[in-house]
Length: 373
Image (cartoon, rainbow, N blue to C red; front, side, top):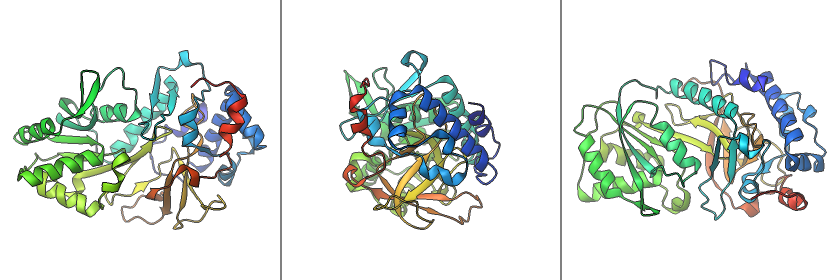
C-alpha cells in the first residue's frame, strides 16, 4: 500500500501530470491485492483474461475491467475480513438496493488526507466557529448511508456551534422538517457567526422556494456558505438549472454565487470532487476519469460525451478500482480557474439497461460464488 500512501501524500491535489506514473503504480498495487484477497474480483479478472501486471502505463487503465456500481448493490465484495473493517457504509438505495462498501483504517486515513488537501484548496477549512444546517439525515446508529456520514463530516470543517437537520429522526423513522430548518435560518441570520449549509440540493431548493413564497428573506452573516452534494436523487424531474438555483439563493439567503460550493462523488467511488470558482469538477490526482462510447465502450477524446468510468486506488477493503455509475458525462480542458487537470461535466443519468460494460455479466459470473449479501 506504499504507492497509495505516496499518492495521497502529494502536496498538490490537482497536479495530474506529475503523478501519472505514481497513480498507475498505485492502481496496480491495489489491483494485485484485490486479485489475491477477493475471490469474486479474481473471478471477474480471470474471466476477462486480465492480469494486474498489465497495468504499466496510463493508457493501460482503459483495459482494467469495469464494474458497474449496480453490481455492488447486489453483492458485497470485500478484500478483507469484515472484522477488520471499522466502517461499512451504504449507498442511498433509491433504486431499491443499497451498496455496502467497507473501509479499512488505512483507507480512511488516505481519505482524510485527500479531504484536507482538496478543501484547503477551496478554503473550506477554518478555525472560525459556524452554525450548520444539513439538508440530509440526522445521524442515527441505524443509518449507515454514506450521504449521512459525509454530511456530518463536512460539519467538522469548522468548529460547529449547532447542527439543524432537514431529515429528523423521530420515533423510528425520518421526517422532513423544513419548518424547523427555516426557523433555524432566520435565527442564525441574526448571529455574528456564519451559517453553513450542507446536503442535497433538492431540499435546499424546496426550502428556498418555501421561504420565497412566504416572503421570508434573510441576509446571512459574512462567511456563510451553501455546500451541496448528493444530487437530486428521486427528485430529478424537479432539478433546475444552476443559474436559476443561484438566483434564488441570492434572493432568499443573500448568498453570492461564489458562496455556493458543489461536490460530486459516490459511495462506490469515495473521491472528493469539489468544484472550482467556475463550478467545474476538476479531477484530483487521487482518481482518473475515462469517458466511454455508449455503443463500443471504447474511451473517447475529451469534449466527447459518453458513459463515465471512475478509477481510483484509494480503497483496499473493497475492489472499487474501476467503476461505472449511471452517469453520462464529458471531460473538458482549459478551465479559466487555472487548474491544469481536466474537469468532469455530468450531463445526466442513464438506465442500468443502457450500461453494457465488459463486466456487465459480472453478477452472472458470481452466481457460482458464495457471497454474503
